[in-house]
Amino acid sequence: MGLKPHLEIRPLEATPEGRVQFYTPQTSHETMMVHIPPNTIEKLFVHHFQTDQLLVVKGEFVLVLLVNRQYRYLLLSEHHPQVVKIPPGVPHGAINLTSAPCILVNAVLRHGSPHPKDYTPIQPPFPYDLNFIGSQIYNASIPA
Image (cartoon, rainbow, N blue to C red; front, side, top):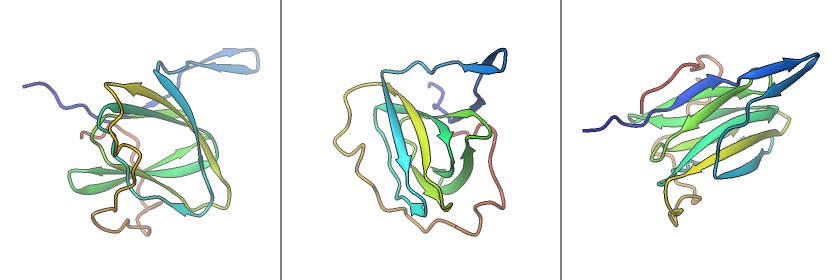
């Protein structure tokens, strides 16, 4: 029996050159820029044959992960450059309760052809706990 893939959260590595920072690009098959408007609460998505590698480049948002029938809320911000790697089969969504948009890069790893329902939003099985957001933020690896 193989190990289950797990979520990874790691700081983005940078190389300083004078006052400029050069960040290590993420290996990917496809790179997408994602815009999350202000005051947005998105439904969940699940990808069957793709790993998302998310990096916020402007603003902030809360990544919602459904792990073992519990939501995990992870604040991602331009002020703390980190990459979140979401393996296939993990439902996830986005919440931006700020008044500014959030821009992020998704360096997608493909593990097969896209599934027809990969980008179809799914109804969360129970409501998000918007009061919980901000009271506890996860910043370590979370097993799937």
